[in-house]
Image (cartoon, rainbow, N blue to C red; front, side):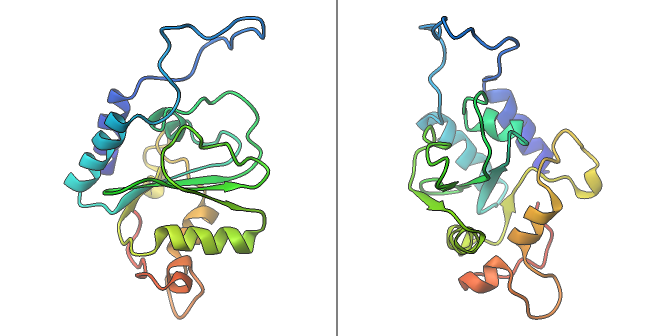
Length: 186
């Protein structure tokens, strides 16, 4: 189901990757699409999320590990990305961004408020705040890695977002006072 959602969204999103990076002396083409998530693309994503009865789509990237996120959010994949970033596109409302203090402009092309972190404790707290109230979110995850081109989120990030599956734990949702994610992410 989510694979169909991804496929539909990706078919609508133009590619931002270029086969050969431009030389430093060249300038972007005047007809090139503007970088960043447009209001119309945001509306299409949110409509698809609502149709699938999802609370949002959590994008995550570390060192360019998720080309899907760059394509859907229309971010420029060029440049150095040495820190994690997160972006929740909710089914309704403005996207919520979490970026590292060293790279605070990583998600400037996405509308919505941005929080920064410099330690894992602050990251966990802010990610929990962003996810508060969500129960069903999409991520680039494929159960049993059945669709490897979609499965971009590492197991540690899934554990961080899901929280412990058994017993009282310290998962983000429990610490943030939100609902527990006992079911797998979609």
